[in-house]
Length: 246
Ligand SMILES: Nc1ncnc2c1ncn2[C@@H]1O[C@H](COP(=O)(O)OP(=O)(O)OP(=O)(O)O)[C@@H](O)[C@H]1O
Image 1 (cartoon, rainbow, N blue to C red):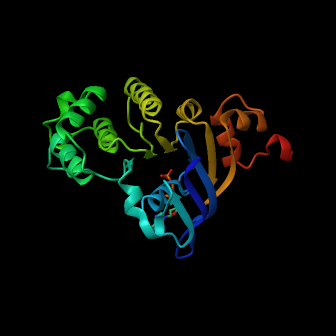
Image 2 (cartoon, rainbow, N blue to C red):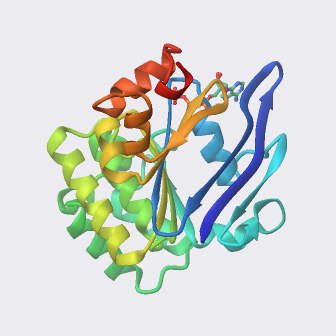
């Protein structure tokens, strides 16, 4: 069963077609990677899935709901993390998490916050104003915020951007454990190809608003006769032919 289905999804800004009629789905309990160079349309796609941007055309269904008509029913069961959305700067980390717990109507919020603080190693940060954290610390707090309501659908825009290798590794392991335990479905936009190879069962390659290739990481490696996804990414970015198109 698919938890996200997008059909003909399009976003136009004046002359710019940021997202150009894309079709894709995310199966239940899987992680799908959304890859593409700067300006390919990943963030715009995620913003439309969240209802932050209204599509110019096309339709989105999430958890059985048509997002144009009934998005709040789905949004309560979803969450997201993005380095582009700042948390209220003057509130401490714990106050921020309480606000979001309240917005999502999380039962026993203090216990949930304590759990996340333990799992994401936020203990020392809880009392600090969000505006005073380093980029990597903000990323971890944003991830805690994205998990506050135990989402069934998680939209992650570069969840390990600005994390050091050790913290990035812990976050990836933690996401894997959360998904195994909860059955959550994830759409992951990332520039980290090793991360995508590890976490994603399926990958969408975007370029100039379109999905120009797709498949499992293994299928893409075979198709482009490459050893890692970084090389596949470069082949697509630089218009090098894939095996079956040569
Ligand atoms: N508010 C806006 N007004 C006009 N054009 C926009 C706007 N937001 C995005 N765009 C354009 O839409 C295209 C897609 O941008 P988007 O942010 O979705 O790319 P992205 O794949 O997330 O890139 P990155 O990897 O750099 O974050 C780009 O050409 C961008 O300049």
